[in-house]
Structure formats: structure tokens, C-alpha cells
Length: 162
Image (tube, rainbow, N blue to C red):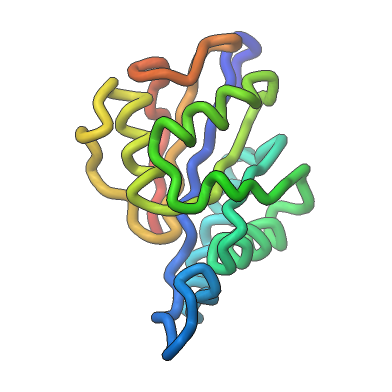
């Protein structure tokens, strides 16, 4: 990463189990398929030397389990649970990422449609210009140091899906 740029990694949680009777969506765990996807995501990040400097994660169980599995591969990084990520709009996610503009490589671990629409908003300027972000997928966005997280401010550098 060039010193005049910073990166935002968007990681959608991996596949989760369906909610059981009376189980809240918030409490759904990863499925075995999701565990494998999260391990693969961690390997992809490690192979490309894309270990984040800081992670903000939705507190939903499936996102926490995705992050835990990724970190078991890449190693410990500074992280915090961020309740605003659960059910967040692209605007909420952009404002959150903007508060961490001093972080060289920030990762947000969350949900659709917010993540895929944020990716589209940042690289094309329109949140409706998304091409999908399947469970476990990662979008790598790059923007100038100090630039606000706003429509069209980033380039989509890489995209990975399981």
C-alpha cells in the first residue's frame, strides 16, 4: 500500500445457519460451510499481505464468528464490536469508516445489503450500482489519505469470494 493511500476492507459474514424456532436473526451461528469460507478468507488476506490494522465488527453472532475464524488465520489485530454495523445503511457505514480515517487498513465485518451498497457507492458513486457480495466475500477499496469516505472517493482494487 502506498503511503499516500489508505484501504478499507469490507468482509461480509460467511454463510450462517438458518434461524431455529424462536431464534433471533442476530443469534444465528456460522454453518460448517461458513466456517470453511471464513478460513479461506483469512488465507486470502494473509497471502496478499492484507492484514487489517483495525477491525470494526457487527455484534451479530455470525459476524463475530466470521471474524474469529479469519483472525485464527491472520493473527490478532485491534478490533472492536460496533453495534451500528448491524442493519446499517451505506451512509452509516461510510460515516463510521470516516471516523477511522487515520487507520491505514480498516476492515468492516458486516452484512448485506449495506456492505455491497457501500462498495458500489465508494467506487462508482451510486449505491445502486452493486454487483453482489456473497457470504464470505471481501472487497478491497483504496482511497487517498485524508479523503472523506464519500461517493466515488475509492477505487475497487480487489474482490474475493469463496
